[in-house]
Length: 359
Image (tube, rainbow, N blue to C red; front, side):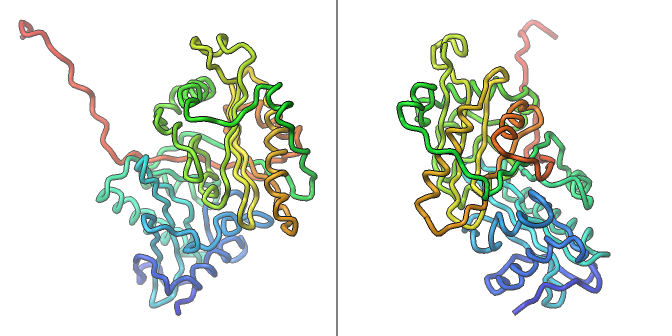
């Protein structure tokens, strides 16, 4: 059985595909990389230490591993000192780096650089549309990915509502209908796309490339809208609700206007519940936030013996004042993360037609 220890020299090791026999060493490596004093480096999502860290959010590296995902390790003579894990969205053909660990105060940076380059080379061979990663701006994280060709395109605040803070009671169906709140349906794909367009700057829309069929996908593997913590939805029961505009014609010409959208992930593992809000700039999400927290309470109370780890919510910097409404509901900021992306396809200009008489 391999063990996770610091290497003597980063140049003597090799990058290889992770094996099932590496499970114990990988678990140890993930835990070690939450300890800043151990000379380790990680993505730092959402914070580098307790009570919430990479390992507690994403669980054992191989525990959530699916056949189409990728995992590479840095191996030096049977000792593992680096790990990179990639989740693959086979529908949108995108890859997301969700874990990148390296140990050894002198070699961790080189180890992680070699692991990232391995993933980039693999992407060039397999041809995904793009690569995503989110990380804290520390330990050279952002510089590492930019050296590998990633572009920084956004920032998120990670807010957390402690588990010992009581959740509001679940709303009745009558109260929800009175406020225009209802579950999302497949016919909401177009209104949701319009809502996303109203809440998201044009450059971000072009980079993320979320299409209408993406809004039609619902369930545990539904990853839109994208966030730095979307991978934890693998360990949650996912639901989504919308709040209709009181005057639908004001929000959309066809009368299907929406004021706001909320995606809820009720944890099935020992991790925080997930809440993601999307709203028009002039919309008040106070009611929808209270409603969503009530849904989390009603779903999580089914497991009476389970201690709530709280609720976690990512908010992008341009999505204010959603962050202030969440703070009013008991949330507090625990981290700030950077979003990066790398296109693996070459963008070419569409050829223009030229009149036959032009020389």
